[in-house]
Amino acid sequence: MKPLRFACIVGARPNFMKMAPLLRALDSYENVEAVLVHTGQHYDKNLSDVFFEQLEMRRPDVTLEVGSGSHAVQTARVLERFEAVLVEAAEAGRPFDRLVVVGDVNSTMATTLAAAKLHVPVAHVEAGLRSFDRTMPEEINRIVTDAIADLLLVSEPDGMENLRREGHPEEHLRLVGNVMIDTLRFMLPKARQCDTLAQVGVEPGQYGVVTLHRPANVDSPDTLGPLLDVLADVSERLPIVFPIHPRTQERIKRFGLAKKLGAARNVILTDPLGYLEFLALTSQAKVIVTDSGGLQEESTVLGIPCLTARPNTERPITVEQGTSTLVSNDASMLRSLLDDVLGGRYKQGTCPELWDGRAAERIAQALVEGS
Ligand code: UD1
Image 1: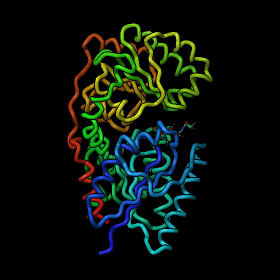
Image 2: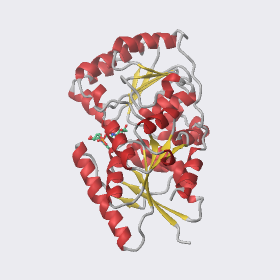
Image 3: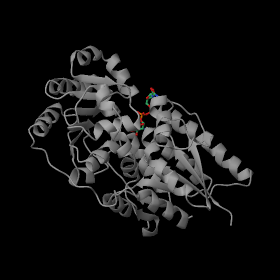
Image 4: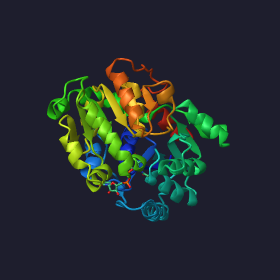
């Protein structure tokens, strides 16, 4: 029997931890050929290469090297270059039976569009999440991807409801759980062996971790400045480890905020960290402050308080059931919730169903059966 040929897409940092377990699961099927395509949306060593090494992921079979650019430029480059890959495969007599995309980055949406136009069916892992905030580029990517994918693999029950409301037929939907949590569970023992805490100079349970990279938080000094002030203040009581995304690094410099942050003795700034080093830090933190989608989920599973610097979330289960609270970019709310955490008054959460480390197996089975 001819093997099923899947094109599996990664582009930016949060894609790698979702695709790694999925590739492992697909590679265990004899009749599946999973071709890994890296669009090159993220290209720095510490936003890309290090994840391949640490997640024990094989190297991409195809690279598109699209690099950075405006949304339109980045999307257009992926469209053009990925269409060529699809056409070439078809002309060589080895067409793809299916595209497999994860998450909500520009590469997810652009490759989906290219495939759908060439009648290659698309499976979307992490489908159905909605923030209902169309000012977020990721929300546009989610809506477009789900609208044209025909196999929608969903991580939490709200996602199923959103897709039903949008009129997707039931046979397109599968509640499979959270594949990023597969990676967390797989990697946690290894992460715990890293000496990251000692290297950074913090003690288990006695520091906070901060990540901020969304345009809504970092692109204006009026928003970023007050957030950084709170972090500098709280660092007098709790050291803060802050791995900085390149966008945020650039903005801090441009807005003249570097001096203020540098003056706070207990704010420890680092470059973006590898997966293992970062998990070593988050899993032993007292509190996490973030605007990342994935980190809301990871902190819920780790049982660590997560103050989410966003006005909304496409992952409501992390607030309703997990350890996350939305603080928007409200500096005084952030300050007061940090006080609650330090005073032992913060809520405890529970782990959502199917975030059990076996989502990739369920997804692989759905892909094989549905292709
Ligand atoms: C992208 C995703 C976002 C995800 C984030 C994780 C979209 C719309 N956004 O945002 O959902 O949470 O990745 O990090 O797809 N840069 C580098 N090195 C790199 C890549 C980028 O320095 O390897 C810098 C460039 O200056 C670039 C900027 O970061 O302009 C933003 O990169 P981009 O890929 O456009 O979006 P992210 O903010 O990383």
